[in-house]
Length: 210
Image (cartoon, rainbow, N blue to C red; front, side, top):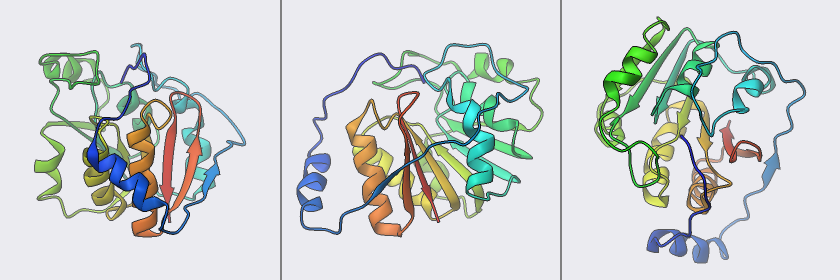
């Protein structure tokens, strides 16, 4: 998803979390420093704030010894990250409303265009759905889940907590651009015991892993 500015958080849930964090256990944020970078063979030619992360996916999978069978993505938009992830997983499911939100450039129905753009990638399945409807019925476990939905604290926490309980590793984009996202990742780490690694490039990537 494309971002161009830093957003001020106006959510009460975010500020409650900040205050409660003063009395709770401190969560260490471990810098993620890839040992190698390599572009995957398939890159989608669209502009994206995710650009740069695709070059560390191979290192990330090796570093955390992740499986490469099933990947789930919440937040597809134009499909850049979905295509990048499809290089490394046997199957990837992308869930998105495809109508944009208050933090995205795209406003209006982009499902048909994204579906056409990703049609050459045979291991990608797109589902037009709100993340809340999806998590209400999905009981599957995944090797990796990527969360890049509307960047509020409440939505990131709800979707991210479910994801942390259904995957060994969860990625959260835009932790540098949206303080609410990073705070939600911190709280999910505290609640689940997953380690919190942080990659500061490309608008920030939070990594929660067992």
